[in-house]
Amino acid sequence: MSDFASDDLPGEATSVWLASTREDDPDPDPLEGTRSVDVAVVGAGIAGLSTAIELRERDLTVAVLERDRVATGITGKTTAKLTSQHGTIYDHLRREFGPAQSSRYAAVQEEAIDRVEGRIDELGVDCGFERQPAYLYSNEPDEIEREVDAARAAGLEASYVTSVPPFERAQAAVRFDDQAWFHPRKYLLAVADELRADDGAHLHEETRVTDLEDGTPCFVRTESGTVRAKHVVLATGFPILDRAGYFARMHPKRSYVLGIRLDGDPPEGMYYRSGDPYRSVRTYRDDGEELLLVGGENHKTGQGGSTADRYRRLESWARERFPVDEVAYRWSTQDYKPVDKVPFIGRAGAGTENLSVATGFRGWGMTNGTAAGRLLAADIDGEPVPELDLFDPLRLTPKASLGKTLTENADTASEFVTDWFQTLVTPDLTALEPGEAKTVRKGGKPIACARDEDGELHAVSAVCTHMYCLVEWNDAEESWDCPCHGSRFDPDGEVLEGPANEDLPAREG
Image 1 (cartoon, rainbow, N blue to C red):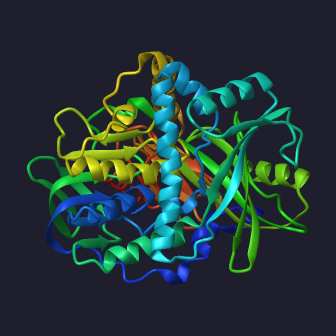
Image 2: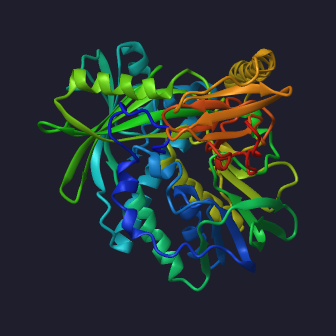
């Protein structure tokens, strides 16, 4: 990434979870040839590996296919809060889904925290798990009072407080006790090791899925092999096969995190301020290292201007509130937000009895991903799972989602039309300076061009291979990002994350 990166951005461009586990990856064992199993799981983040190990505990054979390495995607770029406190979710659930479903959501999240703790003890892994309080703070006392009341009604031990956070003024907060933080990649590497040692499980990293054939059986095809399975679970950020209109019912957002060394002690507890932009604060402790993780600056993928400026604003915010010694790490992540704020967990769509999904975690994937593994494993094993009614991907929630659906799809359509128009009326390529990138027209076709610091020009099609929107340059992450559904590509067009699973073709600049 150094070929394009701005020199003045703070910190090393990686997450602390990845930086602290770089030497821990074994042989990736890419899939070659044909393999038959009960269940194929696509994705080796927290949702995929939780599903896989839950299936093995039910004696179902499993193959996990991961395009990169274990927990290097969304899970490797989280702030890693294990909490049932997900913003002002319980007031929303009570109003839009009813008290019973609000209670169900709360119970699922609390059970997920306990499940992670239990598995950590079972595997004997040291992954920095600590029970900590979680706070949602705001300058809207009425909003906080409603959330406290709704959370208590849902069965959670929530309390109204006014003395937090310690680093800035806020009129009110809701406190959830007995929540947790941990090191997600150390945890999942231990889960992966458990699967590798199991004759009934197969884990293939650096294995890119290129096609999926749903049926009886299902066939998951990769660049060098095929998995034949009775059932398939898509545990990726966005399902590579969309049978339920997910592209119209959730949208991608990017957010940013700094890992900061302080000249002093960091605050205890986890803190979250909702709104636009949100703020997230928690402490990281591992192997003698102590950092403050500060997150925020969220925006729709491919929209919102310079991503490098978002890191700078986040650093400025942190320096105004904490005794910052240095910024050690910086990273960004991408989450998908359903229009009704509830994840999609269950059968992937009409007529897909052998295909399940786990997606739309809205930035709260540590508990939702863990819960998805438990719920999907039970469902695939033929067990009744009443909780899946809430998360049903085929649910109809017009009261909770209609307005947001119309707004988000209007935004997507606007981006599609505007970007195509601007590109078609843009003059042909003029000289790009080193480190500069732009989308231009050549011969009537949109070309994504980026010139690296050595002067080499990288030119690819600017048309996303998912649904033909035009990509936008991400100056901090050095990628071409799709503003419609969140696919991302490197300067040479290789897919970084889906829903696209085909690269951007090379073009002449």
